[in-house]
Image 1 (tube, rainbow, N blue to C red):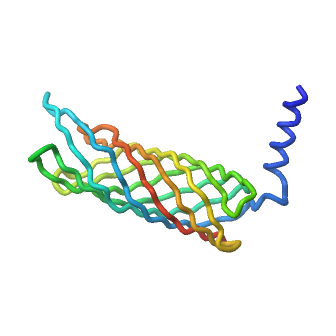
Image 2 (cartoon, one colour):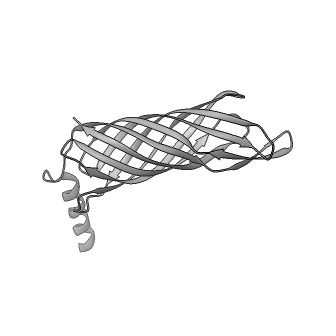
Image 3 (cartoon, helix red, strand yellow):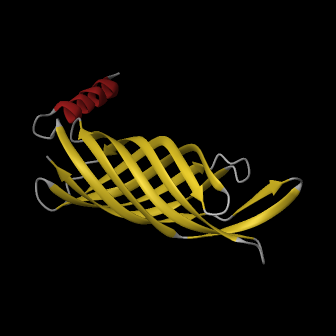
Length: 188
């Protein structure tokens, strides 16, 4: 019982300590990365097709709120583009991806000049393809990275995100892949 009380007291101290908390800070974050979707197979009218993606650029802008030194939330919009090649000798298509998501993050103070973080988010993405039109579907992600402060108001934030994207077109189903990125965060 005593270890539980000690753990509860430590948790309360971490989340409520005025020395640690910078609660009430709003921030803006802009990032740039490369969307690397995994190759996939899909079936159309009984025929299975294999396809591959070429990596493409992806940019995000987010508005966030820090509740404490450890807890923050964001609303984010993103835009990117990837090229898709359908099998050997198949056609190519280019997808533009626009997304909006809400995310929660846990910053982990470790007493070093940087702060690791973990996060997850979910939202909606719209896909516009040159050859096949547009569709929309659910998107979700998990992310980890570090925040490297430049000063009290600015930080460089490299991160790695694993994302799931439902194209919503009835063919490919759920796509997934990696998004390594770097962002600049400004608190105000």
